[in-house]
Amino acid sequence: MFGKLNHLAITSDHYTLLGMFYRAVFGLKASGDTAREIGAISVGDGYLGMTLIPRRENRAEVYAKGEWKQETTFSHFALRAREAERVANFYADVFELEARNVPTEDGGYQLTDGRVTMAIVPWKISSFNGAGIEQPGMDHIGFRVAELDAFKAHLDKVAKTNICLAPKPIDFDSEGAARLALLRKCPLGHLQLADPDGTLIDVEAEH
Image (cartoon, rainbow, N blue to C red; front, side, top):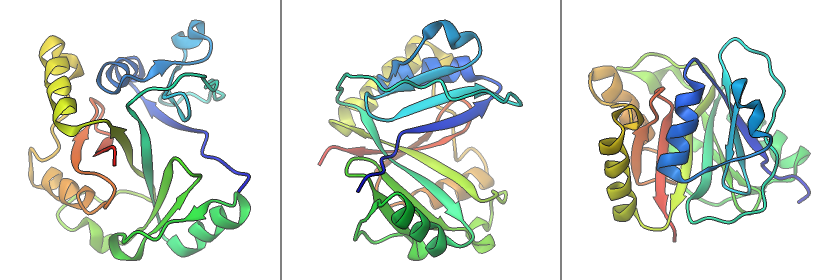
């Protein structure tokens, strides 16, 4: 295996708020040249980086790999693809990511670089019954924490300290309930939430 999962990128009108959210809730650290934060926020767990970019901006990736270790880390991210098998084969053949033998939703695929897992989930219009139809692309981000109850307590403390950093409710209406039910099908997480921008997050405890 010579390929590794290096970084993610999310566009948002509220990228500065999201940068604070992921630092406060998951303990991610700013990475790269912090002077660039006027145009993009880069955070990471010391292994995988995530850049939060202003929407409608075309900016280069500014994540720079860190050298630190921390308890809370990225565990996985999920993509929805119309041709899931073909996409999975691409990443396995081109980047030599290793297939994981884990039961997945509706015949999905899981590939790993040894630390972070990429789940390739089939995109089917029937999957979105009761919810707004999402286009193929990133479905959710997964994090690994040391202990779920401790993380829940920390999440509650962050939200009470600054209401702007509270997770966005998912199942506040029928469409949200359908999205939450779909997210719960992922076998890699045990606690579901959304960041203030609505990006879905799945959290699992360290095994």
